[in-house]
Image (cartoon, rainbow, N blue to C red; front, top):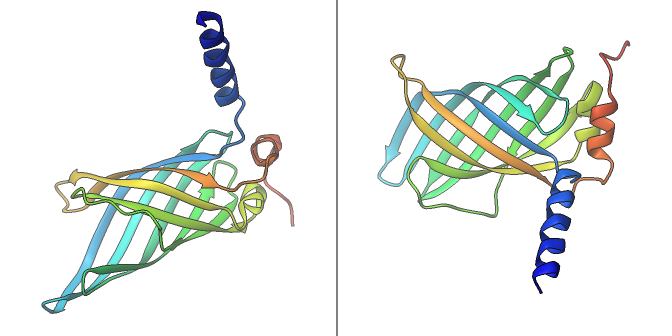
Length: 173
């Protein structure tokens, strides 16, 4: 029994080390320059952010996002579009989509994003959905929020990690 436990543990460890799961961690600042409560149940918000990210691949970089958040009778609707630049200068795009998962912890949310592709390794991400947890750490002296987001890809192709890691530089057009 003890031997089977050890074998199972090592199998799970090896599986996680060589996993094809694509993960991303982002941190940055966000701002809400317009917050308009137009009646007791509805709020219209302009949202903007600046962030940097790392992944479990060779890809890392920074991004910006802008959009609208509406709260209608307690239901939140996001329409946020992000432009991402990797360390080689390739451009990628992703957009918020409704998440099936919810949280009731103040300052947190579950956010889902879909990749629209782009140049270089971002072309490999086209159609991939990322779902992750957003945590607002606090507000800085400029009244911007500091946040962390950690997400993972859902239903990604088996060779996605290999394709991203094999990319060696910016594509020429």
